[in-house]
Amino acid sequence: MPTATHRELEENFLRTPSKVDDIMKFLIDMSNAKRTDAKDNDPEVETNYSAGITDDNFMVLSRSSRFAKKNKLTFRKSSIGSTMNQLSFMRQIDVSSEDRIKAREERIRVASNYRRLGNLEYRKVNFDKAIEHYSKGLEYIPDSAVLFVNRSLCYIKKREFKRALIDLDYVILKLDGRCLRAWLYRAGALKRMNNEAGYLDCIDNARRFNHSEEQYIEYFIDKMRTDL
Image (cartoon, rainbow, N blue to C red; front, side):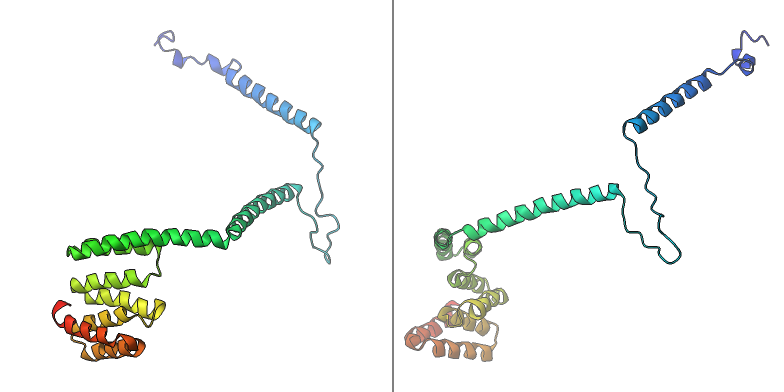
């Protein structure tokens, strides 16, 4: 078979210098030259860390300068973060008591608007919508006993007595232990749950904490028989 047709069968490359080898040698020479120039411009002093180490003394008392620089940069970053946290903290402290009072008054105003909207929906017998408004009001004033009590009454109307008790217990235990409506609504919820002992206990506490409201308590007991 003629070699002119299939040049891959020629063996002349075995007798001539390889161009690939020449290029590789040229690239290696360039790389070595760059390394030599870098060493000449910035000589690196080799540290012998084993100096002074004996069989009895084997403690290393120095560290690489490379690690020292890294630690220094880390320290600077953490210092900046600490400074920013201090600034944020100082801004919070700088808020005057007058500003805090104004901010709370604004939140109370918004919560009162939600309470009015909730009362309007309650009168329309839209208890779910009323609950939604009362809940939004509590997002602004989470310690409003009125909003909790109003919302609990909506749950009672929906016959979700256990959910109503959660709101009422929170008012009694966390906000106002003498709250008349909380005790009376709690009595109404327990009455509907056939918890006669709990009902009587709530009525007793309502009377004990609110001596001047005896007439209203009796009115509520009569009304509860039909409305709650």
